[in-house]
Image (cartoon, rainbow, N blue to C red; front, top):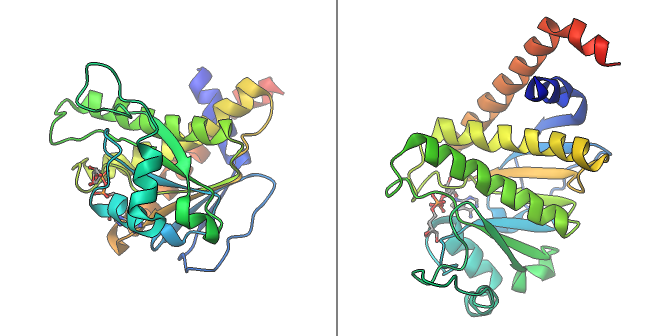
Length: 240
Ligand code: AR6
């Protein structure tokens, strides 16, 4: 029931935009949290923080990780990542799966990107249990948002974590990504009695297919929330 009450309030918290992200174009901020579905290169996003789909060792890699290291300055960003200590008894793990670590934006600070949040999503080539995959992906997004809030970050751009090299099934991954962000923002409002610092949350999708998937997912989530609101309106009015 607690969860349903949370969900009921979602539509009043969020403004949901869908727009094609063009480098240099800014998205209008509102006084509420806005999720924007964008297309493009995350290193060009006009935000305070971008998220890297990292590996647990926080080493330069391929995919979006490679693009971020290249744009931020590979050596400088690696030096920053190496400041995060290795967890004892691990294979040089600096960021366990489901967690996130922060560095400066290195060369990207000249474009206004002050921070890079490195998050290790589940590698589904190794983790085969679906429940565990889902929980770890959810925890990855929660860790990112909590870390961003801790640093007072107001605008952030996220990639489609785990969806390519780490082979997470895309439909489930998109659903978890969007739902976790909606729920986090709601819960933050309830628990801290004010809004999250995050006002602008951009999902930056690289391929047209991923962009379309996110558009469909966000509109179906929104539809479900509206349906619930209708069915449970007596409950809703009791709360007031
Ligand atoms: N901007 C936005 N999205 C991008 C960009 C970009 N410049 N480049 C690729 N993508 P992946 P993972 C999208 O494989 O599955 C690395 O080696 C891409 O189309 O980068 O979490 C790390 O070091 C896809 O939708 O991340 C890890 O070892 C999304 O980014 C491992 O890969 C994520 O794809 C992480 O794998």
